[in-house]
Amino acid sequence: MPGEMLGDQLLELVSSAKERVVLVAPFIKVDALQRVLDAIPISAGPHIDCVTRWRPEDIVDGVCDLEIFDVIADRAKAQLWRQSNLHAKFFRSDQSCLIGSANLTGRALGWRLPTNLELLVELDMSQHELQAWEASLMSRCVPVTAELRDQIAHQAAELAAQRPKITSIDVEHDDDPSFRWIPLCPSPQRLFKVYTGELDEAKMVRSAYEFAQRDLRTLGPPKGYSEEQFLEYVADRLQQLEVVQKVVSASSSGVSDTQAAELIAEYIDESSMIGPTDAWRILKQWMMHFFPEQYRIEVSQEVLVKGRTISSG
Image 1 (tube, helix red, strand yellow):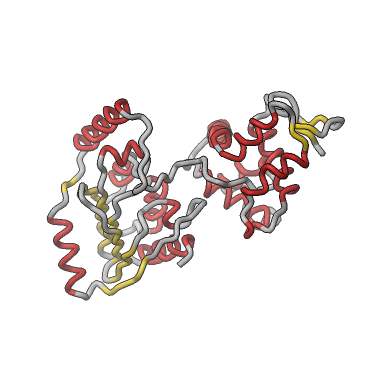
Image 2: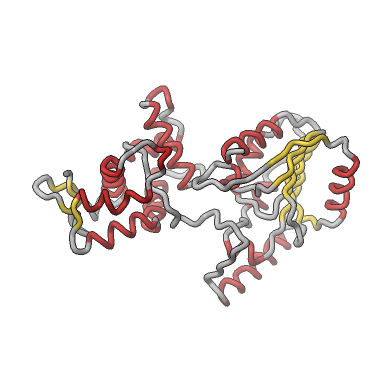
């Protein structure tokens, strides 16, 4: 099932909960968790149990967030649990559940690009085996307290100091911004208003709005940022993108519009239905908007020079 549909499937499942929700995944990112919690009824809402692995190395690797403790603590009738040997992915809402491969992260559920190829299958909790498995899981969990959270944070900090860059073939780096992606929203100056909800599909060209939503899912800015914070966040993410680094490196000796379009062609997803020339035009707009002190349009030139100009060609 396509990634984005998995997220919709999970939100639909929990939105009908009346008595109990159980969210179980080794890797849980704070934005994905908040999105799921927002879909669960609050008024006379169900009890929520959230179980994760929360090993110190998971925090250092960036596959799980310490901040999920605060998100759960802020929600009435919710408890965070830890099971350090957890590998299962299990999401229950009353008498229905989803089990499969998807962690509670943006990429696994299709809310951030590039999405993972995942599977979630709906089952009926009347099956004795499922009830027994959940009971066994909960009996082996430890409730997470502020003290335990601080202990894991301290262990993660010590581990990061010993080996600040950890690589593993087994983990999903949900916050890695260096993947092969390129922005597609043609109006980066409107991105913040889409982020805040001030602009929606009714006020923009549909394709531009959809591209803006796609870019926001990819960049993943936390909720509630001011415009200044938003601009700083997106600029930082852009600086780390492989495609931007490639263009900036080439621009040290000057790169024409034609050369730049050729450089970025391999980063364009076929499903986006956009060519390299248009993609480069959009990327230039993004770079000028988010790095206004570094780039400007110089009509008389057709060459991008690092630190000075972006052509309008």
